[in-house]
Length: 399
Ligand code: ADP
Image (tube, rainbow, N blue to C red; front, side, top):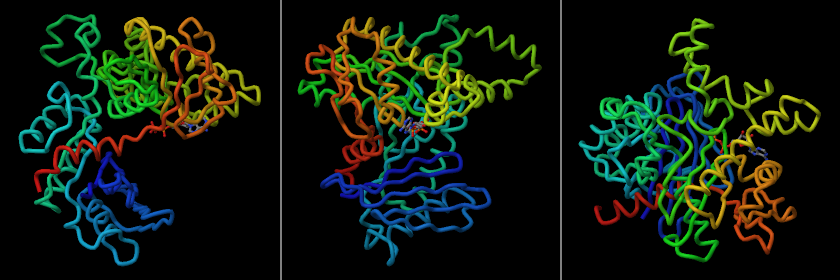
């Protein structure tokens, strides 16, 4: 059975086609600049790449081009679109409606619309992608896999904020958490690497990319995570502030005479390591600048590592111990330096890196010393595979 995985953003769309017999990726690609001049589809049926530049006014056209590429005589991987048995969509916000992946129905689409308020930038393109597939492949079942779903197991003391309860009831203001598919995938892999059932282990998963979040995973269930009502809370990120005193927001709005939109733009786009370092939001640039003696770049790295360390400490407390700490996503998978900084001084938790093993990049590895009580793993995340697996489970008996 072949499953197409789609991740629709506001002006981009990523796709991967899986053969679920062996979980191989048959083709993958990216459409960029949807609805903008210079739209382009990059299709990779293997190691080669095909670039198709054409007008792509909307998501329907983008998906149409993807489907054409998949069956093309020149660079296709399918004889006919009938070979696609199901489509899996990454959906950012399921609110409190979804604690797992679901078959897309009209009722699900209605629920996604109700949740637009919670994810105004992300849910509309997700819905557009689903509707485009309904038009283009009306007989193919579709599944929705939510970024928030894995964290729906958090207890109220973790997800409620210290504001009057009526605002939770009225506006659904609570912690939701994001990157759930990634935290779930790497925690499952970590249990496998520990060679223990996930129902027995306590894991702290650190998804450190441009967006960054940490989760406390207690016997397979997320019990707390650093992102909140929106992805702005928690760690300082590439361009997002992360945790700060909420009074700073009203103070700045008054001083700078910012509108709510300007304020939100500031907190999401101009803060984080970009704002602090003044160099870049990209950790490679910051590591290079720090290497050359740039003090604020060094400061940004130190504060980032310090924040991660604080969250690891607090999650070890709520988990009452930890068996493994996982590093994943662009920075977590690739930066030996950042892993060293974060793990320094965590010996009270039984963490001890093997500095040679830590020089790994982008492959699954146990980078802890042989005698370390708590294992430290580098695990490349694979959200697409998780989406394909859930979609396969939901749709395999339907067609
Ligand atoms: P997202 O999916 O959130 O955009 P990624 O998981 O792709 O982010 O991570 C991107 C981040 O990872 C960037 O800040 C990038 O600098 C960082 N990164 C990637 N490779 C390295 C590396 N070798 N060393 C340090 N940082 C890296």
